[in-house]
Length: 295
Image 1: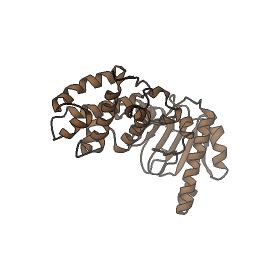
Image 2 (image 1 turned 30 degrees about the horizontal axis):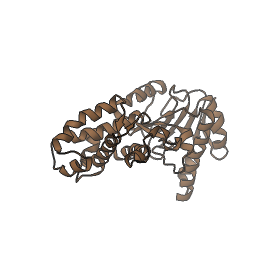
Image 3 (image 1 turned 120 degrees about the vertical axis):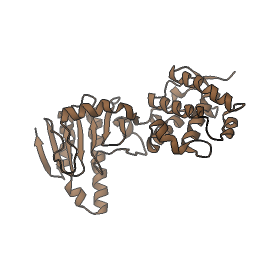
Image 4 (image 1 turned 60 degrees about the horizontal axis):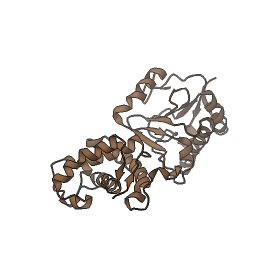
């Protein structure tokens, strides 16, 4: 009998991605008979009819067999990445996940399930903490939960000439990033990296290890972000940075009392919340000027 696998270590977003990947195979269009053999079904109808059952196991957090685990992962990989066997060009419109977000989430799933798929491990819950993704995309249909309160609380006024773009709370300090933007290519790259690194140090100082924050990127993907987990990863890739290189980038605690607001056109970074101001502002203002202070 195929061993039962507990998938409870998967995050809600990871399960949602597998759900979307599996339900793509209910589509009647296209010649995808090769996938029937790859997934271990006798014919296309057997595959399509099994989709609701596997999705139901995911939704109910029920254990799955190793074969079912392999089917869920491979079906998602093929639906997302292959246009020959799947629907890669339709993926974002069908699921709401961009390519970048899909890869971020899929890599986390693969790290957790690779041993199971290959028969080496039936216990994804024993994967090391470093296998957990530090960035979790928040579905687009849910990000208004964060944007609407942000607009109201900070009177957000987006616009290339709207300076400042928010009502800066008390206590806060707004740092002038102009010297970084005005520097050479190397100076700009080093300065932007320094802002991100110093902000990460400060966030790990003021937040508990298991605490996540919300990251808003104007007109782009919203994330949930675990600074402590990210700080321990050897290959750090920022989907959205603290340094506002291109758009409004906002890092917020759940209660919106603490965080940063990056303004790309004013070329400023507003740091707010008493603890974060104390942890981050002294290191930044040792080499950057203060634009505004609201202490």
